[in-house]
Image: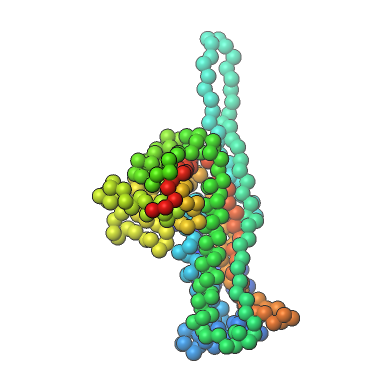
Length: 320
């Protein structure tokens, strides 16, 4: 199975030259930041680290650790690292055969291609903002809790954007040329199979399905789901969004999905998420207004490559 790129912890990033240079600058910059100094003193008191470099490394790791469970978007689309501002994806278009007459002119055409350009021009940011006095009085565990919220919000926004990318596919461009009607009923096993079949019918392998937690709750009541091996006790990861397997698909839940909609995807041909700069953290300060803090950000781009590798069920019941 292809390894999904996830944000690296501080120790792993130190092996990369660009990060070492940037990190040395951050250490010098952080010396005058009251928020960082308060965090460092609290961490030293707790015996977790002993200097400014250790504090900055811990800040990055806390943000990344909190972000990872919320990066469900990377599980439902082909995710790759890149150093380019733009990547061009080339996909072959199907040739069309024809019936010719004996001795007639032969139409000769090479394989046809079309391109999709994906720019890595989306920057997602969030920051902690404290006054000097508040930083001086804050407890270390409160500051750590805020760092966790920073990572959570970055991860959730990335996931929301990937889900919105799929939801923006026009109904006529989906596998089968239309959405699958839910009929205001709960998500049933037969509808799950119908969405899977639509992707398979387009000559793609459906390997991913994602939905709102409400539809996942509905699916839990399906007899076929309960009495099968599709939800093995050792194969669930509810906290990270994945809920076992069904047919050939990994199942994911996210509150960022629209309640009442379900997507089945063959994720590698369907689309791509390009990570140009993964989650990084750095201190910031504005002494003029007495505000200090930490900012986390990432840079990426995404695009749909083959919409017919996606099917969508809609109009399912929105209550349990």
